[in-house]
Length: 479
Ligand code: FAD
Ligand code: SF4
Ligand code: SF4
Image (spheres, rainbow, N blue to C red):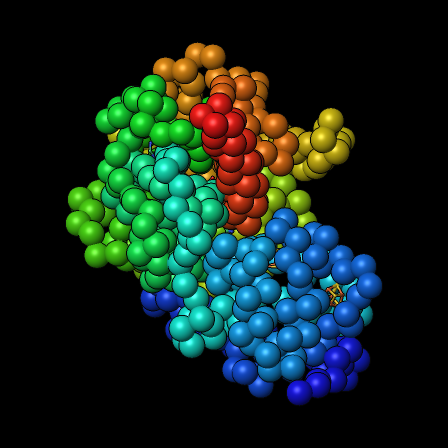
């Protein structure tokens, strides 16, 4: 079947239907439906099949977007899936939660004037169709190797590497200190962006392929890093970044001023049906409360939108710059606004007020001054602009730094950057220690799922090459 392409002049951009704000406020289910086949084909046909596809250039995985859009427009969905899965380990996840407005779609050349091709929604549609038709399988090694790999961290970086290494036929063991595999895909990102079943469906396929998951196992506590290195021929560190940045302001130690991730983990655990004492006691439950969230990134948006769903009385997001300077996805901000969140732009907390437990935030207004060394305009306090916001629960969402990894793992020789991330060689993830690689947020600092996948895949390829080279040397020595 041939399909008409370049239809963007006649066919308007359409996204999958979005549930109404008043309905989606009531639950933690994803807010978008899937495309129908007709709509996916129609939207894919808008692509102008650029000779130099900027969408692909700006996708961290360099996905072959124009080709799988063409195949989708032609109704050749199994081939579209195979092509999309060739470069992306978790296309159904990226299709849902990549900030496409800053990556592929934001760089689609028809964006100016005609609105971009809805690449993420088509990628999700292709993969969901593949799951429904049984075209998706876990890694299937052609031959087994005796060598084994230990991966610390079962987030997207560790899982992408595990998938590639298992495909090559290695024995793969993934260790995670959490009781479930998935990292921030399970315990950080809320269900209204990424339903938990979508992640679990993948991890089941990985487990069925022979990858062994050791949950509730913390390296550096339950198993030493030295022992881990002894057990395996190579090790990948993919531990993410978890040290929430704090605020230096009077009253920050009051009860009810809590790190964003504690709050999100509790909420995600509730969605998964766990017992969560900190939620049951009310400490991490927003229901009926005045909530103030400090920060303007993805974590802050997840907090405000979680508080909406828990039935908070009022939710205010304080961000010290203006809307155009927000670091996260603009789409997420607009969804939060639709759901009733109040944004105080150009505002920052000056003090937390209360006696034992927080009762209010004293905030100040800011204006944007001269650019700093990174080019971002520096927020400056407007004198005399103090005001009060009632608050029963304050969530600090100011970003994350790495935990002291070299110390926790007792590997003082591991080279680190001055930001506390692991120093690696570009495109291989190799550290300065032989046989030790690193990938994902622990290398980049807090980043994106799609970059974690990219790093995990790159590191896996580099580990494979090193192990093959070692195997060749020992074969030559034996002959
Ligand atoms: P992680 O996902 O953090 O996984 C690391 C794993 O290592 C964890 O499971 C942890 O338990 C484990 N671990 C750590 N130390 C040890 C140890 N010593 N022993 C054993 N296990 C250990 N990105 C997007 O692209 N889109 C989004 O919408 C988005 N939303 C986000 C929302 C929130 C609230 C947060 C916090 C992040 C969000 N991100 C988003 C960023 C994204 O989740 C991360 O960039 C990505 O998960 C990093 O992957 P990773 O594998 O490096 O680390
Ligand atoms: Fe776009 Fe992300 Fe998919 Fe790449 S992986 S095509 S950036 S949605
Ligand atoms: Fe198609 Fe847009 Fe990519 Fe060009 S930039 S190939 S129009 S999706």
